[in-house]
Image 1: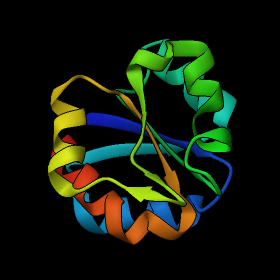
Image 2 (image 1 turned 135 degrees about the horizontal axis):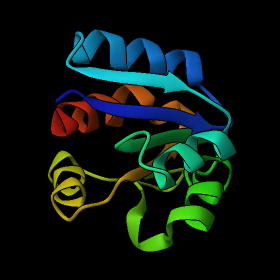
Image 3 (image 1 turned 135 degrees about the vertical axis):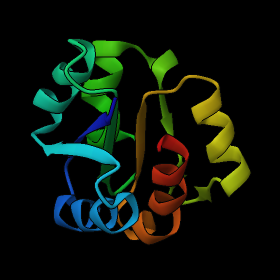
Length: 119
């Protein structure tokens, strides 16, 4: 069964969509939604994962996901002052996190690692 990702957050949706398309090559489905609609899709089981970007990696990227699915399911993988390593990102996926936030300027650094881990 193909896993599905909702792209939410406030920034970089076009760039995120492009990276997912390039990396996943059809192995993942995705939908682009507002942050609220994307978080609701995750909460309702319509998608398996949520990804979003903003300036901080947590505010506009994850606020709705935290509110709707709970902080225990969410993680900021890149903020202005800290970017998780590949191993740390893989560990978050293994630990069952389903909503991932990051800064817009870290998309090319963290998203390929995350997408490969989700596949």
